[in-house]
Image (cartoon, rainbow, N blue to C red; front, side, top):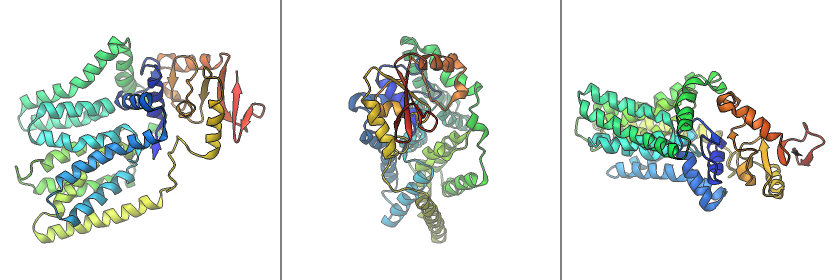
Amino acid sequence: MTAWPEVTTPGYLWSRGWLLYRNIKFQHTPATMGTLALGFFAFGPKTWFLRAYATIWPLIAHASLLKETRRASTGIRALTSAFFLVLLFGFEGNAIWPTVVMTALAIPIAGALSRKQMVRAGLLIGVAILFKQTAAFVLFVATLALFAQRRSREAARLFLAGSFPYLLTVAIFAALGAGLDILRWTILVPLTVRPANVNMFHPGFSKVLDLALAFTPLSIEAVLERPGERAISARWLLLVAVGLAALVYPDFTLFNAVACVPCLAVGAARLMERPPRRLSRVAIAFVATLTLSRGAMVAAGADFDGRVLFWNDEPAFNALIDRLRKLPVDTRVYSELWANVNPRAERLPPGDVYQHPWFDWFSPVDHTGERIRQANARPGVAIVGLRAAWPRAEAVGPYAIARR
């Protein structure tokens, strides 16, 4: 499991009284960090909590999938679950990340749209937007689909309901004195500051092929399904899946598309039981082949060692954390090696500002980079680096601790 420090460290700092966007600079909407903050506040930065957080959302999604396939045969249900799990792990869904949380919302959103419950659908999409603002792609796709069907009133209700959770959240942050900060970091910064890694990524043939193959069963089912045949329409499942898959833009990393997997799995299950029998046999062969081949690739590239990546990575790192925890409780700790040093050591960064140490392209915003540099120069700060670079600092295995 991967504990992405982009969200876990802000969550920890928020649990310690820092406020997102005012003290903690990050360009995503707040729900992932906020729910992590509640857990850290209640239980502390414990590894078991991170495992539970990463697991609960795909479990909810899988439960929704099992509910939708309850009338299918045992074999179809088993193959569908295998298809779901292979795509989930293939898209790196074994992680703490906003799109993993959204897997639990995918089927309920499609269900509400199918039942013409536009306010409910909009609120569910709005919740997804609170976890990552690019979930607004789903809102735009669904709204355009309703307009195309000349259902303008429903489109308006959907759009207003989908916008409400974010607007309410902005009002709450404004009451806390960070209204302009949340608008800047969740709207202006993503639109005006291009992260360096965006220039490093492009879709690539393999990623496009992975998505195209995964979408194939649901796409065929959406064409073949008759209106009113199912309580949850395959066409809405497809549109929701397209909106959620669009979250790969602009860096085209597949873990940002993982939220669409439950919808794809429902479509695969339906196609595998659709008459005539020749079609269902071809669908079963396709899903089984894709599941086995992708599953083999996932297994070949996986490390079955039980570690939480970026959290308890290796014994030497754990020794470093033990040493940092023995420092006075008011010691401020900074490191550019691992952003999760702070929650692991249960120590705050210097000053009253935090930014992921690798995201230097955001440093000019709010003068964050300069503020961090000034805070690091203050007495009493412990800076963690590599022993090879700091031979005179206190050594802890391959690491070093320099004291100001």
